[in-house]
Image 1 (cartoon, rainbow, N blue to C red):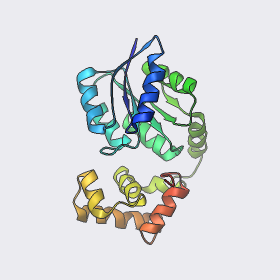
Image 2 (image 1 turned 90 degrees about the vertical axis):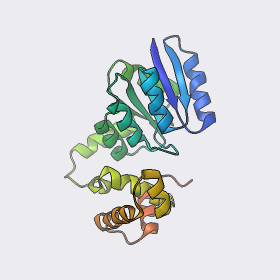
Image 3 (image 1 turned 135 degrees about the horizontal axis):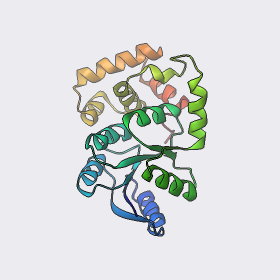
Length: 212
């Protein structure tokens, strides 16, 4: 029996996933939440085989939540669920310890396949993302623009691209405002951008955020 925790801040999406999983005889749901902090707490107490983790959460993002779950040192595997078919996200999350990366546009059958594969200690990446990752292997280092950013710079970029203020980024990442400004300056320099509007356009063009 595969035990699982479902994490998505959209209640309708989370409920739909849970209904799907409830119909599978080899899967049992130990808990569900819309919070990264609560996801880590559930993994600490319930010790599920798999946590199905939405990348975009209101408190911690998928990268930080994955890092905290992996740091618990248990046997829980992390399967990231996201709307962004971006190979940079996938690469960083696998490096952080996630066992899989699946897009929300995937079919129910693909999601179940991914859950069972990571539960069996395998790795699963949605085909459209895997194709991009394979192409990237042959690229010169730095060919993918966002590859030059550190994980923290990427987190700051995504928040700024979505319209967050320095104060809001500071609060969500537990950084001082001056530190956020330093990261912002580095992002602008590394990507040859001029301002936050350029950051937003870059993030949309690279599939790091959507238009909503």
